[in-house]
Amino acid sequence: MPLVSLENTITLAMSVRDRHASAEWYHAKLGFELIRHVDEAGWSEMETKTDGVVLGLGEQSEPSPGNTVPVFGVADIKTARRSLEAAGVKFDGETETIEGMVSTATFYDPDGNALMLAEDLTEQ
Image (cartoon, rainbow, N blue to C red; front, side):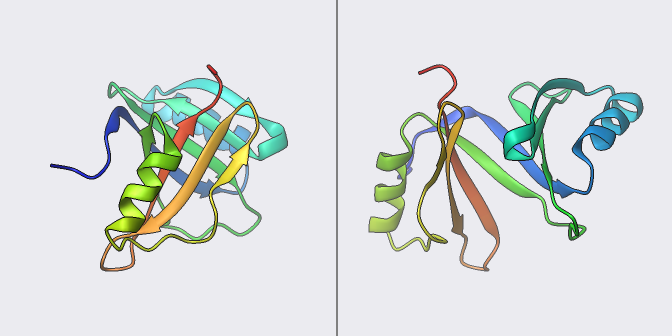
């Protein structure tokens, strides 16, 4: 029995220099559609061709290639995090919240790969 009940969504978050230019590239080259630009958060989301999979573009001045982080959607991030922590899963700092948008928490697998939980706050 899994410790966390995941939703049928995943966001593949990657760092880019220019979210707007990257969004245009992903649209032109792969046919991804823009969901939204959230300029105050330095974040953009693209709908991929795979149901439930979103490409998230986080703007950084010096992104590191190959730094994609899978972001798993959960209905209740507090409960999910408590369950994983109780099972010895290591988290990186506190849960971060952008009011009216999302709450996220980064955690690690046994090999140190970063993963993230996210609770969508846009519909609450």
